[in-house]
Each structure stands twice: as structure tokens, then as C-alpha cells.
Image (tube, rainbow, N blue to C red; front, side, top):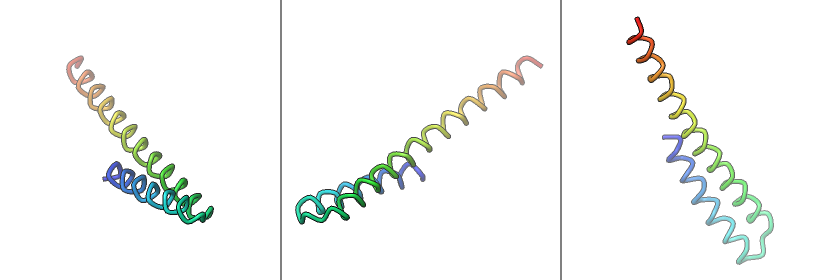
Length: 67
């Protein structure tokens, strides 16, 4: 879910940034840039969380086998 929200924020940011460029609105451009960065951070966070969960499961499986 967080990964999808991240992609949505990136898309929203891209639209805002392009609109700001077309209209010459530096504030809108900056908002778009920040939305894209926020979306990338959310996506990276979701990816990292998924990898951490995978490692946890592997460690638990290894521990169970070693018992």
C-alpha cells in the first residue's frame, strides 16, 4: 500500500512540477519536486520494509531448522 501511495505521490509531483514550469510558477514547481521526493522515499521505505520482513522470515526458518 505504501509503495502504491509513493507512486501516486511521484505522479502527482510530476504533474505539479510540469504545470509549474509551463506557467512559470516556481512555488508549484517546488511543490512538485517535493511530492516526487516524498513519493520516492515512501517507495524506498516500503521496499526496505519488505526486504527486512524477508530476512526475518529466513532467520526464523533457519532457527527452526537448527532446533
